[in-house]
Length: 211
Ligand SMILES: [Zn+2]
Image (cartoon, rainbow, N blue to C red; front, side):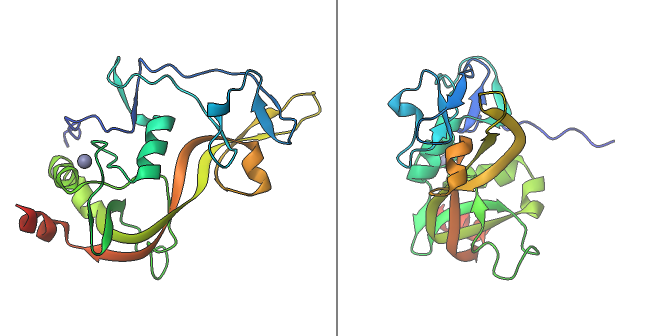
């Protein structure tokens, strides 16, 4: 019988905590088209005018929810290229910023160029610890240096107009590009970057050199 994989001893920076309550706000039609909160504040939208899902900010309160990403911390990490595990700046060298990605090289030629990802980059010590503590990662992941990455979209719940006089939540969660009509109808939960100028690197080699 296989033993269950051990929990990492570090709670990732972008993970949500049970003490960080989700905001439940009433969603209405916006006067500009799309959706709005009935009690909307300017900080509910990002610089592109997209509405963001709210959640209290109280990292470390309650229990960590490993499977749930905190919208604001993910957004800050992605926007400022912070390590998704510790929240410090991600590692950068002449080949670019370090990303540890699920290995999907078979998906298309040139992968991960043009990959849209919600996973923020990582720093070298955290990348080392991640593969040490989660040995399954070694087989399933690949270290990549990314020369350019653009914040280009959000990932979130898509809403729709209805015959009932108010917008309705659809079953769809999707990547929605900024400056699209659909961007007015999404309640964003995570920021998306498109990767380009990617180079595969040997993580063990980089770690050894840094020691
Ligand atoms: Zn880190």
